[in-house]
Image 1 (cartoon, rainbow, N blue to C red):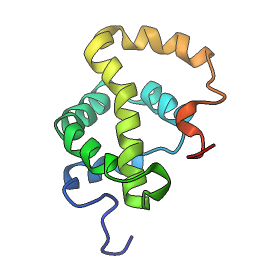
Image 2: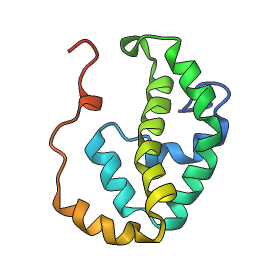
Image 3: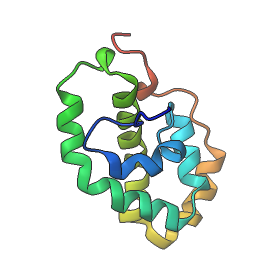
Image 4: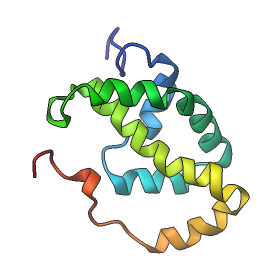
Length: 118
């Protein structure tokens, strides 16, 4: 990106997570959750959780179809955080056991992947 940041101003703390977590589809985000180590999930969760309110406020100020690429990456991070939050906050050590069942259930389509206005 040659000097540019991957995310909107104010979200620099999440830059290290863009490559691994700002994935474009629900299926990719679910797969990443299953492939990530517990430490990777917890580090992402710890960095992103405090920024949820400000990220949502930033994104809510624009219609979905008007998000620029940096804002879309931020939205994708928040959508990934929804997957990770369940693993970290609710399932904890049992996440590995739950991942086995999720591996057998393939996501083929999701509302979050629909084009805005579709």
